Length: 355
Image 1: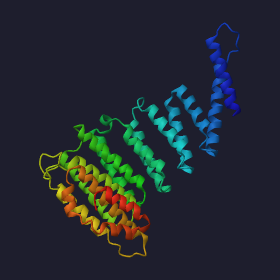
Image 2 (image 1 turned 90 degrees about the vertical axis):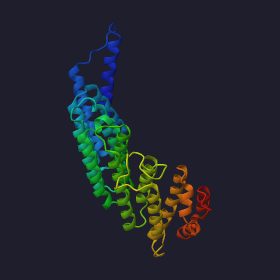
Image 3 (image 1 turned 120 degrees about the vertical axis):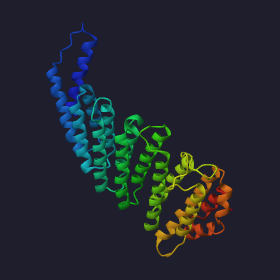
Image 4 (image 1 turned 180 degrees about the horizontal axis):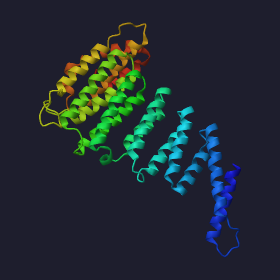
């Protein structure tokens, strides 16, 4: 704090001297100011290693680095946040400082893609050491959303993004309860879909997108059946189903909206409804009431099917869905799985028109 006060005093005198040249104000040698800047940077680094959420230190480092505009100093800030996050991986101040650095240098360096790749790998390593680290995965999602579509989705980067999907799939299988990883996968898939909707020449074709979505739906279905009672899996399936209904299912029930012809890897809306009902029926049975996981699985399955019915009603397909969905036992299933929420189930069933 002493070095900070001295720095403020000298910079204040310099500003006054510049504004009032006729006033006899002591001059501040540039060498003195450089020494003071180094002192502030040195002591702020020390205090951040002791107290990583000390906002004043982070803010003054931003101020000094911004004034210098040297690429090497920005890289040093990334290294400092590396060190801070190595012992405090959930420090919001450190993650925010990291995003600030990347945002400032985004238009000024030629190796931005290399930095982004390194960031993604850095987050992955932190996530492996620190479970349920929402801030780390949020930073990774930010990296995807920040890049302009034309820059991100070059032919090379499109393959990299697809490779990212495969890499995060391996991690997700080992951490099925961590919703942050599935949220990251959703952001990647939306980015790919966005490029297709914008007719990016490096993007996927309609058939390839259909196949990718179908593959993700099949993969999540397998995980739901293997890892019983994991809400993150059901939430990701909601995302997949919502996008599929909106972008891939045609209103005539016969061909995908983005395809000139029906591809072999794509199911139409009728098959989609049948598959979701089969999944619901297979997960709605409480095999052993002594284990909460089976009760949770039945609850997630029932609430998912109610949510899906509401989505399909929007697409004017509610009558067909109502015909296939046997709702007579839905209320009983929910009450048996989670009786303390009986009033909530009644309200939801009425909202979805399932009574």
